[in-house]
Amino acid sequence: MEKIPVQKIARVLYVLVLVALVCNIIALVEVPLFVLSGNRIPNIMRVYSDDALLVGEDHMVLAFLIGGAALWKEGWWSFSDTYQIVLSCFLLFSGCCTAVILWQVRRVLKTILRGEPFAPENAVSLRRVAVFCFLIAGAALARVLFSVCYYQSPRPLATYNALFVPMFAMGGLLCLVMSALFRQAAEIKAENDLTI
Image (cartoon, rainbow, N blue to C red; front, top):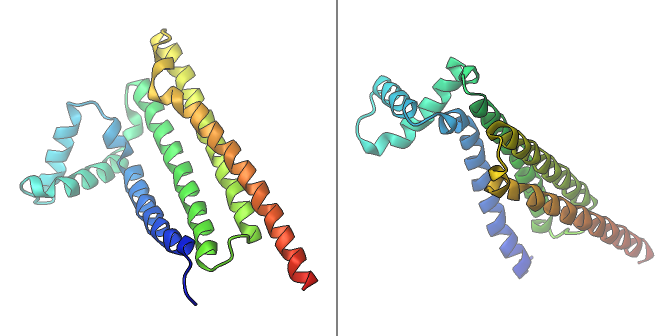
């Protein structure tokens, strides 16, 4: 069976989504290391890169991964700064939600690659994507409100995090609409298949 252009595009998207999912999972492990203040990061990377016998800048990525894993082992949640704890929790929660979103997008792309774009499971996957978009929007709103209270200033309302709220809320609404369209298309396709 010859692949139509949409399936060729879906194949490329499928690979890109898998790469993004792997990068997302790696980034989740590194969240504590990313959140730490500047003075502690070089020390942790030097200690764990020396322990792993890594020398030079070529092994910086591996040292970063080892340092992030070591922070999980040491208990990064014992940070003294409340803001670091909130930021870490927000990034972990959003990263987990993003992983679920990417996994659901992968499922939708698989049905397109099979040549069944209007499968009923696409509607379910898109509804799940919408739910997780709303969860990210809610977490971003909670973080913005926390930041406003923490800094006692309206300045956090002008940050990228404040943009996450409407952006992911609109993404969730769009996915709900697409879910309803895919569900309706699947029902019409089933009726047509029964008629023939």
